[in-house]
Length: 390
Ligand SMILES: *Cc1c(COP(=O)(O)O)cnc(C)c1O
Image: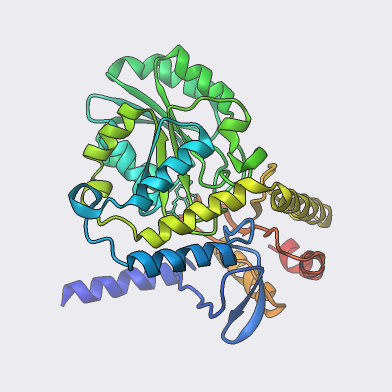
């Protein structure tokens, strides 16, 4: 049948371009050291920044909620699925970040598509950074708004796009990540804020990679740099070591999202055991800056050492350390060589990053030991000939 032969061709095409992916299976909990095929590896490619993914107080909160409330939540929140713990988590998020209201989603992906689709339509205009996450791009497409893409972090291009095109929309949105997930660089939030004031646009910031990581108490970059954003997206799946996500904003904005976001309205609410886990992860993230300091200590050490060894990094001050290779096959070969030495560092290839910018994306975890970091640096030292030959 044509269907199956075409599917096969598409897969062969991916394989031919070194773009076919198949995930490795991990048989331990997620932390600095993991088990793959029964063997130990040091993991340097997770978003588990603070090492909370297997934290015992998060799992015990989930277990006690499971025992009291069972697993299933039975339906969409708007039908019969809103439970006490969903509300408690939303209130806890508001106390953590200082917004009027927050709304949970099953994932950051759902939060972005639902939020943008519910607030903007074909009579509006959206201005989006070229490197924004796929879920932001998909949300913009779903909204059917007129979309203007500005070059990554390019404020002056955004200003000229706004001055030429703001007039075409009733409402306008500027949307950005605060820390860019694949580059680890940081949006000029203050400049974006003032452009939004100048052009009567709302500012939406996705803090997936900065919440829990940046700022005192881990409140992220908007709060710590004193930038008011109109729509705030956060996820519990990364630094918080949990699952699920949320949007925070004013009462009215959240009310409209609650009524119109298709990924919220037409989807069963997440289990309340997740909400209980997320509440304890906020407690942990907020209670101390020790893990964050350790994370930044390790990431600046890695950045410095890899740069000194001659590797080409994308500069930045976040714990995301991209080592550029360009060619997808080169990055896979290097990643395999590291794997043979006991390190799991995933190669990132298109479509996650633009063609020609395949990279290793190294992320330390606060629970890595000094020895873990030193032996990774040693391996990069001995593998340098493989890199310089590209
Ligand atoms: C990971 C990520 C998401 C998706 O969050 P999930 O909770 O994993 O679905 C959204 N936005 C950005 C910027 C991300 O990096």
